[in-house]
Length: 112
Image 1 (cartoon, rainbow, N blue to C red):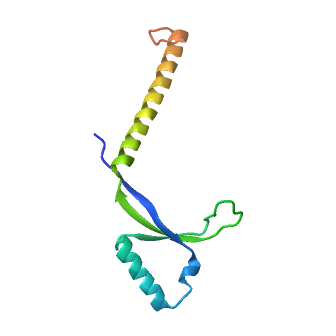
Image 2: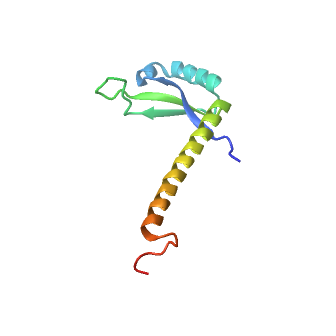
Image 3: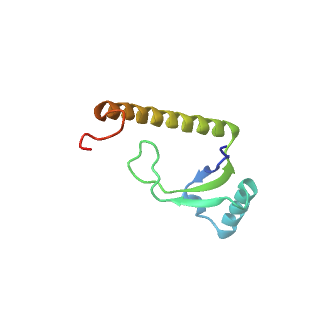
């Protein structure tokens, strides 16, 4: 029925100031990040990042990794989607009942 989704998570964040060193040192850090997170991981820059309780932006880099959702995440998502569907069905059923009382079971409007 449902398939597992590929989700993207932020595996690590760090300050742009972490790049204020020699290019050789930056290259070593990037190689270490590739070794840890793989060559498919992405580097994302967020200039509008706010720390909790901060009134000023504090730009951040993030390492984004795509992966298949875990069994727990999958079960949680499926349960949430079912609950949302059930809620929508209940609202639609209540609306149908309300309109049926107002216009009759035939579904015809008063001006027909």
